[in-house]
Length: 140
Image (cartoon, rainbow, N blue to C red; front, side, top):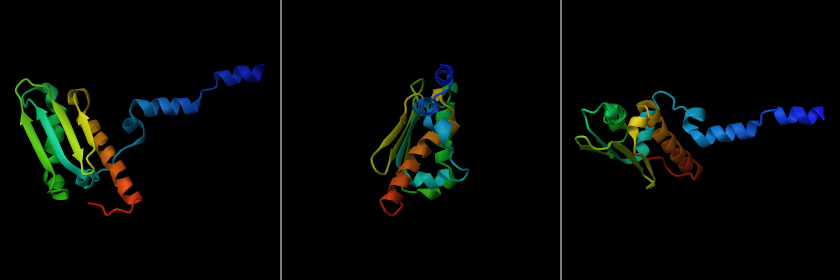
């Protein structure tokens, strides 16, 4: 009887890990090494940004736009189209379209930090890179 009582109080590690993974896998399991971001930008076909440049809520979208239009990102993927829509008082969003046609859209970028936003798009690009390597496709 004591062993079953102890077993029932023991944490179920499998359920704990799965609950963390379901919440936000990027935050818990994945961190992009510094300097790898521009290399992953080569998997982006188009990046669309919409924000009010004077709104405090658009800080993350502005920062990510500034990052992907920097020289190191443009050099990594000169074919990528970076589109900017300025809207006064409108809703912000960030959308990344990858070379395989998949998308990663952030409809409320003001609810997430710029670092996490970049990390989540880069996570998707890394999955795409792994699929390319697994299928022995040449990397872009």
